[in-house]
Amino acid sequence: MRLLDKIALVTGAAGGIGRAVALCFAGEGAFVIASDSNESGCAETLELLERQGGKGISVSADVTNEDEIRALYRQIGECYGRLDIVVNIAGGDREPVVEVEEIDYLKMSANLDLNLKSCIISCREAARLMKPKGFGRIVNMSSLVYRGSPNQFSYAAAKGGIYAFTRSIAMSLGRYGITANALAPALVEVPAFVEALGAERWEMLRKECAQRYPLGRVATPDDVARCALFLASDDAAFITGQIIEISGGARL
Ligand SMILES: NC(=O)c1ccc[n+]([C@@H]2O[C@H](COP(=O)([O-])OP(=O)(O)OC[C@H]3O[C@@H](n4cnc5c(N)ncnc54)[C@H](O)[C@@H]3O)[C@@H](O)[C@H]2O)c1
Image (cartoon, rainbow, N blue to C red; front, top):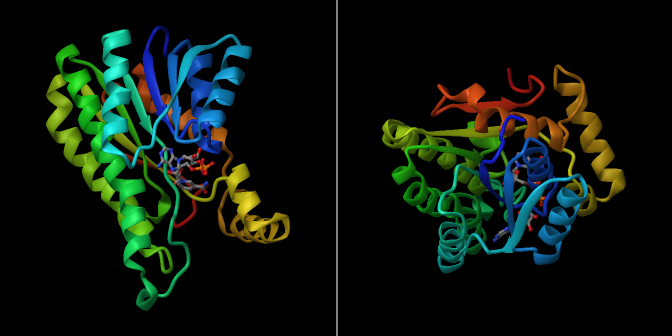
C-alpha cells in the first residue's frame, strides 16, 4: 500500500479521471475526501470506493466559489488536523473550438475561473494545512494543450497557467517538504466526453488520435490515476515542479 493512512483530497471526483484517482488512492490505503460540485456523482464515487474496501467521505463543493473551497479545507482541518495530498482535477473546457476573433469574454473568464483560479485557491488552502506539518504532495491537472492549441485558446491559457503556477509553488514550498507537480494528459476516454460528442463523433476522434499517438491508442482514466499515484507516493519524493505528459507519445 503506497498511500497507507494518508489523507487525500481529490477534486472533480465525480468525473472520469477524478473517480479513477479516488478509487486508485483508496485502494492504496489513503483516506479519500472525494469532492465535486456534482453531489450525487461524488457520493457515487464514495460508494464505489467503500465497496472495494476503501475509506473516505464525499463533500460537495464548487471550486469556482472561494467560500466553498475555504469551507472544504476548514472541514478537513477540523476533522483530520492535516492534509497530506491534494489532486486538483475539477475542470473542463467551457469555450471549446472557436476562432481567435470569436473569443467570448464570459466563456474565457469561466475557463480561467474553473481551470486556473480554482487550482490557485485550492493550493493556497492546501499550503496553509501542509506547511505546519512539513509534508505535502500537490498534483495539479494541466493538459497536453499547455503547449498551445490552435482552437482551445482560453483553456490552453488556463492549463499553461497551471504549469507556471505549479513550478512557482514548487520553488516556494519545497523547503517545507511539499512537492507540487502537474499532469498533462492527451485525449482521455471519459464518459462525459463520449456523451457530449455522441458515440459516432467520439469514435472518429478516438480513431484519429489513436492513429497519431505513437502508442496507438488514447488514454484511459487509469493511465492518469497511476501517474497521479506515483507523484503522490514516496517514489516521487524528490520530484517537484515537473509536468508529466501522459500522452502515448503525442507531440513528441
Ligand atoms: N478527458 C480528457 O481528454 C482530458 C485531457 C486533459 C486534461 N483533462 C482534464 O482532466 C480533468 C478531469 O476531466 P475529465 O476528463 O475527467 O472530465 P469530467 O467531465 O468527467 O470530469 C470533470 C469533473 O469536474 C467537475 N466539475 C466541473 N466544474 C466544477 C466546479 N465548478 N466545481 C467542482 N467540480 C466541478 C465535474 O462535475 C466533473 O465531475 C479536467 O481538469 C480536464 O480539463 C481531461
